Image 1 (spheres, one colour):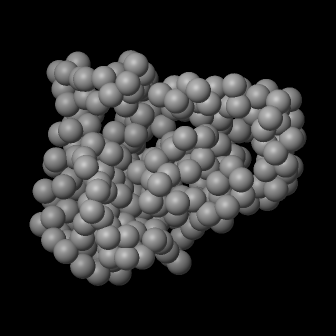
Image 2 (cartoon, rainbow, N blue to C red; image 1 turned 30 degrees about the horizontal axis):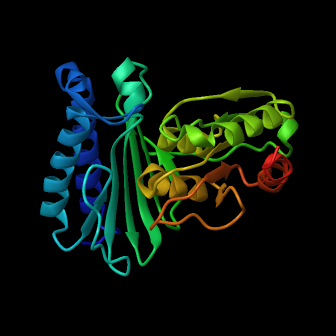
Length: 265
């Protein structure tokens, strides 16, 4: 495996694009089971993961796979690892709200080296390699130039599968809403982060996330000139998950200050 090899990258990108076409199979969408009251897994999730597991094993058999819909015990975080969310935005998929994506990252020794997020509905493939910039469909993207929260459009995720966090989330939402242009809610972390990277959003935050939710988007935001930190200002974990704040970089500290002020009501 050589992520500097254009042929290898093209093959991975093609696999992700092909996997995204499975989203259109509504018969697979209708076959689902509940992991929780508002936490679903559909046949699309399982089919995408199976498809990419097999394709990636052909391209790089030595690389492990962390996936949302599999047992991830026994992974060695000191060795290369794919981090896959086969359908980021499953709730959106179930309801036909066309904002879902395949999110795939390649990490090595705890650091993301490659990130790909494919939204088949928009036909947009966001990509980044460490040190090489961020792109959508091959065109460079950059974060916004907003300098203060008062000039920002902010996405606040509500994580419906962890409603015990709702009070904290909605305190944050109101506090941020009172200080920014407006609030948005896309419902797919990887897409949210890519929109920050492309300057469509100025910031995004959500608590209770898993590594596959944000691993690819994290690198894409960083390579577009932005920043991704935990909601406490630390480094997001690829092992246990984190609440995260992704921004254009300029408004990170202002947003963290707002979160600290409103954390306990």
